[in-house]
Image 1 (cartoon, one colour):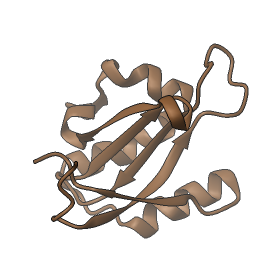
Image 2 (cartoon, helix red, strand yellow):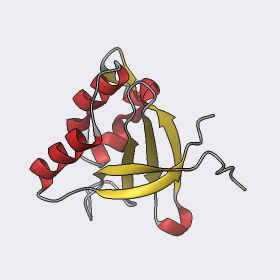
Image 3 (cartoon, helix red, strand yellow):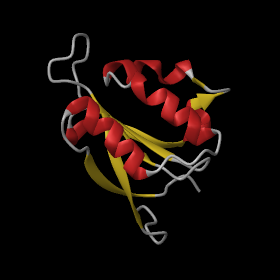
Image 4 (cartoon, one colour):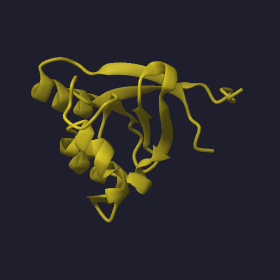
Length: 123
């Protein structure tokens, strides 16, 4: 069983594959818990019963201000390349707030992002 003694964190679901996305037979989501250089990203792929995923620090997803192309497939499936500049700011230690991310998402999609709860599993 996973250790949840560190408590649950709120993650903004900012990337999600559109229904019927070409070439994607399964849903993909990217959610973010912003906290500067220690920002966490959760990736989830597949239908609920058979999904896989992981939690990764932003500094492994963004290298030298650019998307680590290891994650290109997930970002493309979620149409989430718009997140890269914000993630680069976070990886650089800049102050990007939850409200900044919500406002950017809302201006693009017309509604607030969903929020998921998850533990910090990067320790």
